[in-house]
Length: 112
Length: 114
Image (cartoon, rainbow over all chains, first blue to last red; front, top):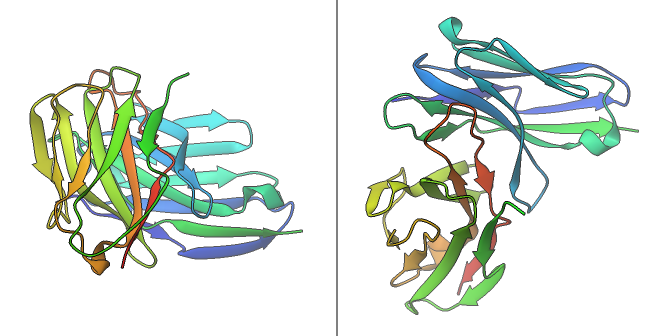
């Protein structure tokens, strides 16, 4: 059964810093991997999707990489801002049932 | 506008009173799913559907029912709600047809069972 973990569970950084969030998954047979952002009490918003055949995706200050063979993905946030404060979750879509499995999330606080 | 619509946004009910939370998507997606989110437990999948008339249990299906009679709708039914079903619920949808199709979420339903 696919399992997804995220490190760290929480992170607090001063504004302007570059930071990396980590996601690991146990079964490399994935369809794709997505990174989401969730604000308190709100729904999840997809930030980046990496297909299984891709190595990375970029959107603005965000860059996500995927190393399928080692079961890892990273989300890099450049020049962090207080508005980036949120919980970030990764999810893999598996090749078998094509179901989605979520990690527990990393709670990010960017201090002014 | 492409969206997943859940209703109601907030719901307060009493133990044992049947309720339905509706979910509708306008993107012609095959895949739909229900999650509950509780502090410290993260997102847990309740049920999912790969297509019309096809539903499967997720990690926490006890006490819930779903149906998928039409492609766009995927209601969540609590036949006899209990206080331990107090939670924030999310519906989501995606296509099965391409590897680059994202998962779209509704805004959530905050349920309180007294």
